[in-house]
Amino acid sequence: MGYKTISLSEKAYEMLRKMKRENESFSQVVIRLSNRKTLNDFIRCISENSSEKLVDALRTFRDERGRVWSESMEELLGEQN
Image (cartoon, rainbow, N blue to C red; front, side, top):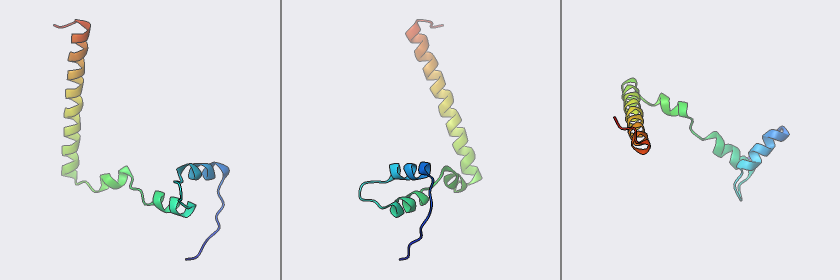
């Protein structure tokens, strides 16, 4: 395996150093971080139909959570209708 020398700013070096695990080389950190999946990677894997279902489910969850929260606050504050 060959090696390359790269230059990093002090800030970039410190960020990379903080992400480095015990007994892990800087090369291993770069490889580990570059293999991480992003939210965009996940989103591209979802079909349009599935994404619409997911949005609907999230809206339902949010609405229900808001209703339950409002009822709990009314009960707590003694402001029941």
